[in-house]
Image (cartoon, rainbow, N blue to C red; front, side, top):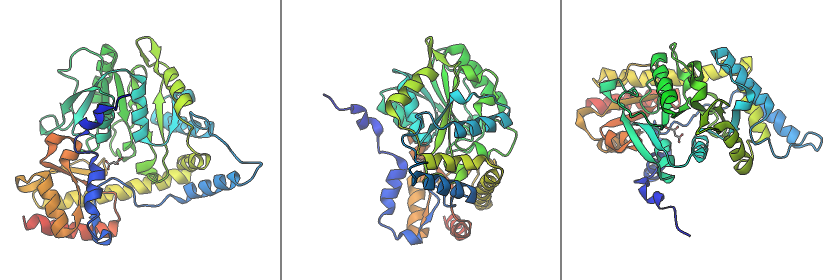
Amino acid sequence: MILNENFDKLGKGYIFARVSQRLKAYDQNKLFKLGIGDGILPLSRPCVNALIKASSQMSKKSTFKGYPPAYGYEFLKQSIKDYYIKMGAQIETDSIFITDGAKSGLASILELFGKVTAVINLPSYPAYVSANILRGNKIQFLNADESNNFLPTPDGLPNQSHLIYICSPDNPTGQVYPKTLLEKWVDYANRTGSVIIFDGAYSRYVTNDAPKSIFEIQGAKTCAIEVNSFSKFACFTGMRCGWIIIDEAVNFNGKSLQSNFRSRQDALFNGVSYPVQWCANAVFTEKGEREAQKTVDYYLKNARKIKAVLKNNGVSVLDKTNSPYVWFRCPNNLTDQEFFDYLLDNFMLVGTPGSGFGESCNHYFRLSAFCDKSKLNLAMERLDVALKQL
Ligand code: MLT
């Protein structure tokens, strides 16, 4: 037996775990946390009602449920299918797999492949990189910076099959991929036998006409897998529920990825609990949708406040309104760690150092809008002073 030595290649470790370790020394009540994207708003009333109802069914012998179906209950898959139809994407319920969230979902997809070369933006959500490192995969990074408006294209990539990660709106940059660019990626993937993993965890934050799903793009069904989560728009970070879509048309070397993923879930996943799936299902009711929109609007408003303070102090931010994250170059040419320490030690403000999203981003910083709006007002007063005093 040997250890998986790839653990040694994870570097300094998961950024949010490192930041949380560092914060242990501080009085938690005095901190202004704009670091990890963890919701603070509670579940909406329709979700809570559905959760209570389904939980009470679990308490009676006649309505008790044992193991949930490994691919998810039909009622939730049907609601997700209907949601995609409204976006103009026709998805079969058999293509939908209910998961316990995007991060574990992303990792499970890698089990469909042997060794691959993953194409990942730099910066990117760190779980893409960690999951590929742990499987011993090669990674080809694509710089997402001012030179390409933080939106890399396939131009210059060799005509070989890759596993391509696209997050839109992107974490951490907040950039949203326009339709034309997604078409370019889908065309490249179909031409080269590549597979796109589209992470739509922030898709509800799109406020312009950009696609919210890769399946709004013609040709995506043969080359794309979509991963999504209820966490960021329906306050589910503590509930754990998401979904993956793999159309039967996605094949790799003649094998159906959907059929292999079915086998994977049968063998290794016991599904998401009955009450949690009903809770998630309530998001798609008329009232649930209204509440979800309020949640998104709340965090977007926070994001606009953060951007305003940065801009007023001469810090250039991506002027987009499609994301709960604000990504910017640290002022005064500070490194991300210097800026992090300055904000924390002097103002009790917590952000995320850019290098957590890619080593070379050590002059960038991310502030998250997932925070209480009244606390944010105070935090922004402090940020304003912090930037003026630099
Ligand atoms: C983030 O803050 O980027 C993520 O939401 C954290 C996570 O999902 O692990």
